[in-house]
Every structure is written in C-alpha cells, then in structure tokens.
Length: 374
Image (tube, rainbow, N blue to C red; front, top):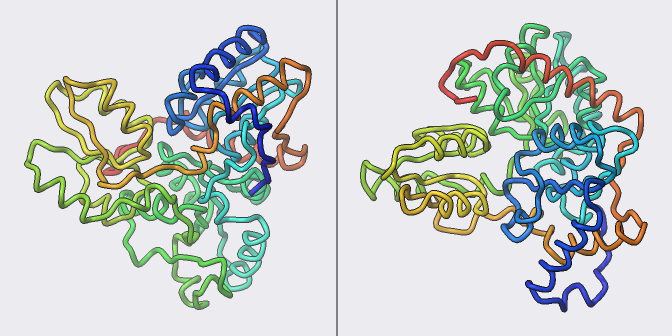
C-alpha cells in the first residue's frame, strides 16, 4: 500500500455542505479539462460528482474516449487508476485522491510472488501453462501475463478467456481470485478434481508435484475481502423469509454461496438484473453495500432490494476516497499542481496492454452460454 500523507487540517474541518460547494466550484473552473470517474462501490457523496460511473475497466475505457481531458480523477482504487493511465493518451494525467486506496485482492498477488510461483510450476511440469489474471490486479501482474502469452479477464468474460487459454495451453494459472476462477471453471463443466489452490506463502504453493501435474486449473490463493463475507447462513436466512425472495450474487463469492443463489453475475449484470426485474420483486444482493443501498433507493418502493448479509459488507479501501480527499486533489489541480499521479512505466504498460487487448479482442466473439452468467 502506498502512503497517503494526512490532509491539511482545513479539509477535515469543512462541513459536508461546504465540501460539496467547493468541489462543485472546482469542477466548474476546470471544465472539460477534468473528468471524474466513480466506481460503483464508491460512497454516494463522491458519486454525486462523478462524470461517469461504472466498473473499473468500463470507466478506464470511458476515460480514454474523453479527448479534451487533461486530468482524470479516479474515485476507485489503485489498480483501477493504473488501468486508466495505460488506456488514456500520454498527455492525460490520472490522479487517485488517496494513495492508500488499494485493493486487498490485488495485494494478495505481488509480482515477486508470481515470478517465484512461475519458476516453481515450470520446474514441475513440461505442459504449457497460460497465466490469466483478473483485472483486479496490479499493472505488473497484468504485464507478466501479457509477456507470457496470457491475458486479462473480467467477471463478465472469464469463461470465454478460460476457454481460449485451454485452447492455447494445457493448464491455466488463474489469479488473484480463487473464487472467480473456481466458480467459472465449474460452471464451464470442469470437475473439482481439475483444480488446485496455490498458496504463494508456501513452497510450491503447498502442493505436491503430482498435484501440479494433474491439475487443469491452478488457482491463486486470493479473494475479495468484501465478497468473502457472504455465507451459506446468509442465504438460509433469506430463504426463510419466503419463496418470493431471490438471491443475486457476484462470482467473487465463495462457491457455497454461489450454489445457493438464484442468479450469479458481474456488477453490471447485478445492476441490469435489478433494473429489469418486475415490480414487486424482492432481491437479496451479495455485493458491496454502497451499490446495494444505491439500488435499493433507486427502485424503492416498486422493488425491494437489500444486502444478502446482516452486516455492512463495505470496501474499506474504496471508502478512503471521500469528499475531503477529492477536494484536496481538485484544489491542487486548480492551482497548477498535480498530486497523487498514477503513472505506469513504459515496459509495464506495453505488456499489460497486450494482456488487456487480447482480452478485449476475445470478448468481441459471440458469447457462449453456461450456468454462470457473463
């Protein structure tokens, strides 16, 4: 995690109304030179100032399309800002309002660990391994996959990318989220026995050479700290409320939760499902609480939306982006200073883009159908 120095005291002393007025004025002053991106999991006070909202890749692609922009302020987490920097033109400067806004899942796969894992795995099998990384990973990990004939994936296109990987190799190393990898492979029809979990904190990932050679999918031992909070018991409590309740979850959830859900899909799929659901329907949603609450407010009283869990499943690192940090970043821009710029070095950018562009080209193909919704 990068270090974010404390803000000057005045930023935390301003009232919410004062912060809103000051941010709105800075946006007006900067005009078309500025684009603010807001991830779906961001708090409402920040989303209110976003020019575009969406998931991480969609936002980065949207930023790249804004040809007048000089500054992109990404209200998300570090790996998202890296992707935006790689996809936008060289003259565009990408800013993360709080450098400590990282992603615990992405941090579970450090490039140094991946390099060790790769050497270990190649030392135990002569079969070709194709590395696939979820977009929730660092630019360095994306670059490794691009450099080693692999690709990126999203929760929407993971099945398509895994099919491609198996067409071009004998095994897949999938990182950093073991649950997305497992849920996708099982939905594609692969058995549990075809998968093993590689723990980067153990020699050879805690596996035997025989397990490595027998596996089709080597799943990195990583997970989302938010989606990992949902449990089978949460599903059972919703079922006890009556058959009119439907359970809708993200594929980063554990297999036991996915198996008890009615619908499984990406963030965009979750939003689309609620939007298109009939009036009077009831939904328990297994994803980050800010998005769930926003959907609940948007569709009330015609549809009932609540969190699957009885606790606040909050992305705490995303929550570090708040109005004081956003105003601080904009104040500096208005005064001619760029703070918290996220910049990916040319070599990392080059190989990361190979992995990203490979994914995008594959995603343009017709979509296969299977149990786990893309």
